[in-house]
Image 1 (cartoon, rainbow over the protein chains, first blue to last red):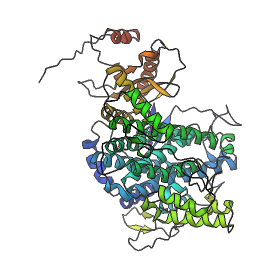
Image 2: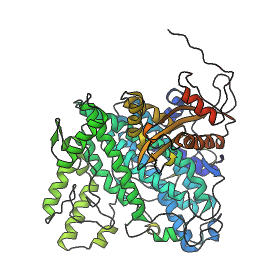
Image 3: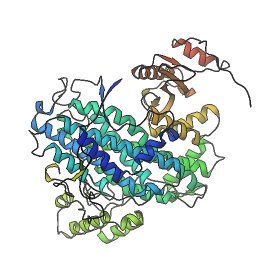
Image 4: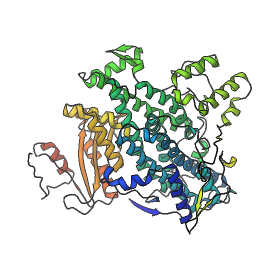
Length: 451
Length: 147
């Protein structure tokens, strides 16, 4: 394995460093304390990595077997447009997740888990850096009239509420969100990166291996704390209950499913050799993997509650509780974590705005459904703008005021008031002399060209 | 022995439960905290080298290791195989060998010039396994003192 390190042109590198000072203020602490927390690990470096030795032939689609594209200009414009959209969306998610994690990073109960999340945030910063490297290294003028400087500025100007994908527009309410997000939403990221490792656009494929290596730890930074919470909950801890975890799953799992795109789509990406799987196929594999994680969490709970039971006997208890939805050996169905139905609380894709409950039951009435959501979602989340927006859309869809198709296109729009800091709504381009200039073209909101 | 369709792949976070269960089967002790910490370490350090064998979606074997420099004065990058476990019900499927092939290939790709491991002499089967893979007894001997 051989990797090439690439640093962005100074102006862009420094813009990202400035961005991190605002949204990742503990970055300096992490770097200074790296040897304390990660003594054997290579030092973190803010740069892009390009892996050598990646397959140079297109691996799927109509052009399978032909050489991969080194530059966008050699691609079909529609194909290049898809790649550009994917890069911008990926960049948005990387920077967006840092903004979300920062909201509740300080609320971790355990120092180890907090430092894991902090490291994960730094690596997401590097992933965003990697995507900006892809934007800047190629010439996209055939498929976009936005200059490279403006593209970077748009990405770095996005805030929670104006990112491209819904999962990145939702505020975190507690540290349970930090770890659940890692376990569920980063897992979608892993699937996307693994598919993009086969991209017919060679620079994208070469960017994926190191991102995937780092993503493996991000998932563990979610799953390991969740397992520990379940163990403590089984022993009667008053801190994080399995109900808290369930509600966090209910909040994030539907958004994770939607990150794969509409269940009927994805064929164009496969045809262009950009991904090997259509949306539904990838989403199904994701659901199977999350189901496995949920099973593990429940086994952890049962073993902790029934320490004298053998592995086999504990599994039998778990199976009985799940099958009868009752109580076995003092463990109730409600004590465990369950995978929500894939049609539950959806606003994109085939089941968008259907009245399907957490366990798959259908509702006839919007009010009854909203009451059901009230019981199943975290209180703090329901008090936020994302849920309010969903309630408004759902009500309008079911009263006939709007169509599902129109409702799907609506995104919660952010109207934060600037003024806390001069760079609160803008990217800071840092001049060579060290003085800052605030970008003029920045705005909250995603340009229509990439929606 | 169960003949099975075995899939060899990189370690993932979702394997923690299966590996904990396999360790319990092999060692007779349930140690979830140990495996959460240990697998968290390998997933952070080098998730590609550490390898599992999967049958019907369940882990039936694993080999954990990483490339390090500077251990015991060995400055050259060296692959270290540190933990190995195979479900006894699936022995005879060449799972250990297939795990090792993937781990060694990954170590080589990471620039390792050699691969090392420590084997308890009382576990003859393990020594035979590594010998069959081409490992030789090294001059570097472990010493221990009880405190």
